[in-house]
Amino acid sequence: MPPEGALLESRAMRDSVQGCVEALDKVKALALLPDNVHVSTEGVARYFEVSTEVVRQVTSRHREELTENGMRVLRGSDLREYQSDKLSLSSASGAGSYPQRRSSLTLYTRRTVLNIAMLLRDSDIARRVRTYLLDAEEGWREAHASLDRRVTAVEQCLAGVGTALCELGPVLNRMSQRLDSLDQRLDATNRVVGAMSNRLCELSDDMLRMDARMDDFARQLRDLRRRRRR
Image (tube, rainbow, N blue to C red; front, side):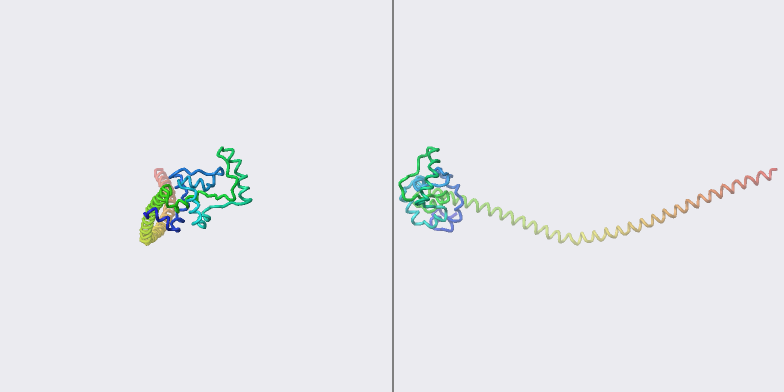
C-alpha cells in the first residue's frame, strides 16, 4: 500500500478514490449547511481543525480541481437567491443564518471536502482520511484479486469441461450409432414376430378345419359300425 502522502502528489490517485465520500464520516462527522448538501469555508476549517485561511490557500492553489469536484462560488444575484432559499431552512432548524454582508460565498460538496482532505498537508484529520482511503483501496484491491483468482479457476474448470465434452462427443456418436442399429434390429424382430403371429393364426385356422374333419370322420365311423350290427 502506498503511503498516505502519495495522495498529496498524484492527481490520478486522488481521482481514483474521489467517489469514496463515506471516508469523511468514518473519521469525523461532517456538519453540513441547512441545505444538507453543502459545506461553507468555515465548516471545512472546523472539520479539518485548521484555520479558514489554510482552507482558502488550498482552494486558491487547486481551484480548477476542486471546481471539477463540486466547489461553487456564489456572487450577486446567485448568492442572494441561495441565501433567500436557504434562510427559511436555517431558521426552522435553529442553526442560525448565513452571513448577510458578504460579496461571495464558497460552497463545498462532500466530494469537494474529500478532495481537500487529499490536498491538505497540515491536518491530522486529513491524514486520517487519506489513510482510511488507502486502507479501503487496499481491501478493494485484495477483494478484486481474490475475485480474479476465482474467475480464473472457474475458467480453468470450464476449459476442462470443454475438453471433456470434446472427448465425449465421439463416444456419444458411437452410442447413437449403436442405438440406431438396435432400433433397426428391433424393427426387424418386430416384423418377424408379426409374420410368426400371422402364421400362427393360419395354423389355428388349419387346426380348426382338421378338428371339423376329424369330427366328421368319427361320425361316419360310428354310422358304419351301426350298419354292420344290423
